[in-house]
Image 1 (cartoon, rainbow, N blue to C red):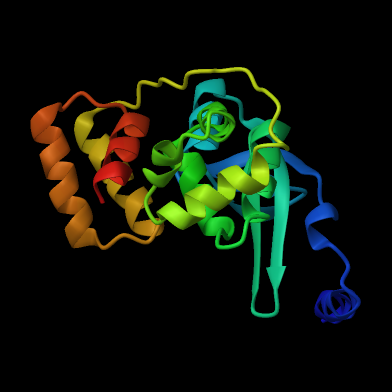
Image 2: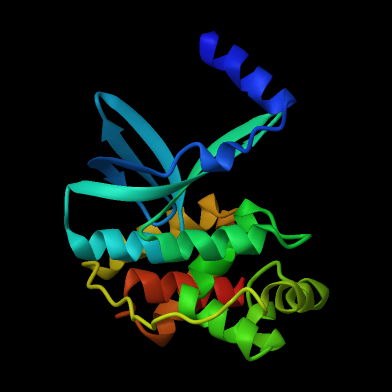
Length: 215
């Protein structure tokens, strides 16, 4: 009750909640392509993540993790978005500053393209690259470039490639992740069937990225 009361007071005087939490350090209790649970002092924090963060956490193999946070709070909604590094969080914050792009759209962009790909697309004014992300139309892509180009300087390119096990398990995880991102199970099944006919050896990240382009 105290926390709710404080939340109401802070919201009413326009305190910026996104800056109240910098990171969380704890045990990685659960890891999926769309969300994680980090246990810290006996409390499990559910945190929404991008595919890029999932891949980095999976590759690290560490149980003790540090995840950088963005605290999204509205009158009827309160969520944590988590990032493997500050660079990805900064891109996320820049993206949601653009009219028409909310946290879920920004997470979709960071699941379809990595931070460097987004940054380079903005700098090179590659509208088609940005527009290739599901849910991002031409006008929104143009706004992203117009509003962020001067803010984006440079970044280092990294590749995320992982062995995620058997194809059946990969398919199930991809299905779960895409449904959680808002796609219908029927449409996801059709796309995954097509992709597995094309190549049954896709990694989980490859499978989700390719599916996002087809959905």
